[in-house]
Length: 556
Image (cartoon, rainbow, N blue to C red; front, top):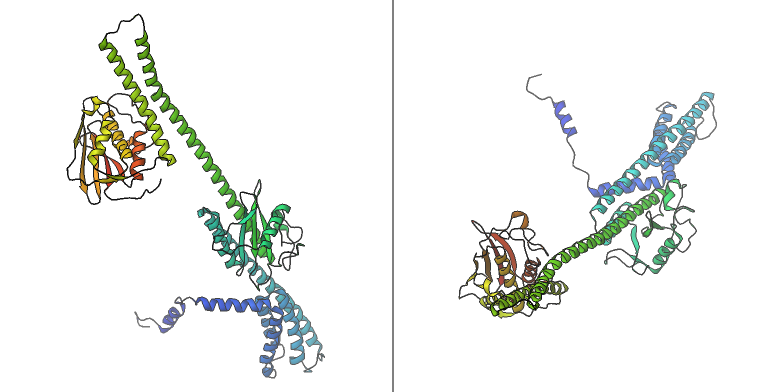
């Protein structure tokens, strides 16, 4: 052989081992349908197979020895048993025994035996054929059960995996319908769950057909009796592994349901979560025992999903209660400090003024009264902030937007500050800014809170700057201070309720911690946006985008 040349035989082997294109789905379905028909009519298949093989063998009767036909008939028996099971295999062995005797052993066309050796051959053929039919049939049945178990496990695994991702009962029910129809030849599935009034209702998507009154009545009876309907007599969902073999469903003594309908209660540890109803497709065969086992397994998965959903809802309620308790604690902590402190100051100042043994000149009285006014203003601001937040969260503070100049809104917010703090604010706004469509009172409160926050978190003499510039469809407004800035750990928290920063020029933070939370709610409800920028070398800048066109309240 010349080196470097590939022999033709090798090329043929390569061609024969090349992966072939997958058979079209229609061809696979046709083959599966044909095999299903053959298995369904196994005894007829055995009869036709022996008859057809006899017709094929008969012309060669005088050519081959009479004992060789037994081997060919054994091949037919094995094929029939492998395709149809043990019973058809035994029928094929008996028919082959008769056909060999009648057509291929002299005297022909009679069952009489001339030679004793032929009788021994016939008996041996019958025994061997029966044994091969039984063994091959059992192998076929074990293979069929293994394939059915594999498909069932694949379905259950796929359905269980989908339940992990699902969050609503409707989507779970839709997935169940699809999987059940795929595995049970178009069967329909419906999940009934208790409504708020205790009555059962269908959990199927709105697009699914409404269940019939008979189905609802049967599902209710299933819950009341705590027993499946349509399963073998006396069976419950918990002991399905001990079912006897059944030929068809509907033997449980419930004549009011169809023979191919099953109602299974969805049991969990503490209650019945609902009912699973599975009905065979019109014209389909009744459910077999493997089908019923699959339905019970699906029911267990659905029950686990419903219980998980209940636990998640309970967890959500617990989490809401925990957050409410935390909010209440924060509210009490903030309010107790912000209300008690000015009240204590008021009481002390007024008590001093009422002391009869102290002589007060006009200057001291005015100083004490100024302290009273400061405490009253602080108390008023705290109460106003709490009321503003409650009205915003309840939707009771209805916005009445109109067109306003930004300078007017900033001046309104500045006017709400104490006189000694106004001098620290520098306003630098362009004159050609477009008006904005907002609620006057709400946005005056926005700039009041932004200015208060900037003044609080700056030094005693530090200035706060308010600036703005026009951009397409919006106006960018900022409030900038020269304080220490906002630490990185505080940036994600500053807009939360009752949160007060830690850096206030060496002082403990005062206020309710509601100003920025109220500001954010108002800005978002007006169609704007707000965020925090750092200022180099130090300081913080709150930036607000205000729309210059009419916007709808997006709702919170």
